[in-house]
Image (cartoon, rainbow, N blue to C red; front, side, top):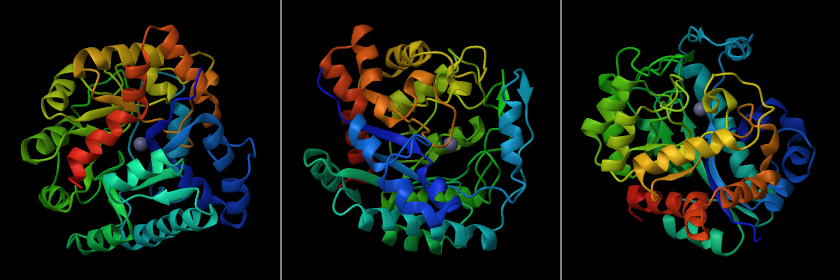
Length: 354
Ligand code: ZN
């Protein structure tokens, strides 16, 4: 079977570079067997590109690390870390944007930060890995929003106002299982201003990590398709991070899109993070999302290098095995191409309008 090109809705590879900048060349350019992504394994697996997240960790000792460990034992309802101030977040965000720019230079033409749909299509047609600069949690942008113009100039084309921790712009979902995403207030006034400006500038406004009130605020105000870059179906796995059928209906009606998250804690029906299972849970979510959204509004949002993924999907090099599992499940090549990259390209074209 031919390898299908996979364009992906979310990864945290930049966090690996941030944590070990001295070894970034080895981390990016060689197959170290560590983590999920690097240039050789992207090439091997047909990873054609995706959203590269700029994400600010909470100060050490990173509380989210402990919280993630607790997610091994559902039911759980974890508190969220404190807000991170602008003065701490902005230098980190700049460093991560710099790492992405470095990747482009170090790749010798094999990796490019894309700013338009035409650039994305050109990269996919010419086997250049296409990166979208994405911010996950807008702590690095002040209430005057001026920094958004600067990040846009650097190449930013996608932004989530919150990672689950609260920001000046809104409230995310606390990690809880089983739990509803309806967990508190939505966007702040500044968050609504940020949404309007993202709409005007053609920056995708990501719904993953927003709670239900924030989701509703975006749905009411946005003039762009509703997109959750890395979330799953609440009907299959009732995690607070997953989307209810009501939310999926709103995404469908906006001609938006959902990227299926490979994080086992959001895939598994029992909420467990065990990674000893194969592709069955991914298939269950895909089937449900296709039923709710149609074939044109579903893709992948791997969470590679940011989450524990199914053992069979060990890293980007294993993406062809996932594609084979979709074929064995009855998906034809047309549907496979839509899920693997066509739907992402189309929704970005509808969102960026260029
Ligand atoms: Zn995330």
